Image: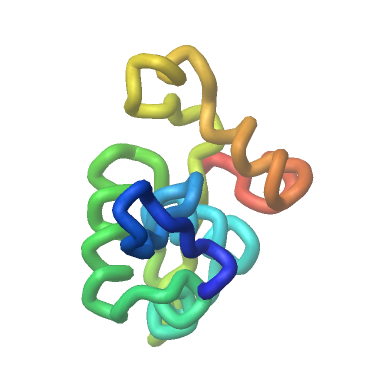
Length: 111
């Protein structure tokens, strides 16, 4: 993650990225709908507990649907969900999925 460091006017280093952890988790699940949350957390760089909380947020917001398949969870991403920020609320998250994962209908079709 050292590639994300920037220096502000006071000489202190700050790390930031353009996408939030919520976006990173959503993208990781869109790429692999049967991924374990432990693996999603590792990919995103958060704790497993943080990944669980993010998935709960995404589920509550209607962006994800979780289905229990045996001992595992399988996730379905809803590409027609809209961004939450007013500046992008007219756009669907399928646009983001398409940008980073390819065709959103192919990889994460809505239920």
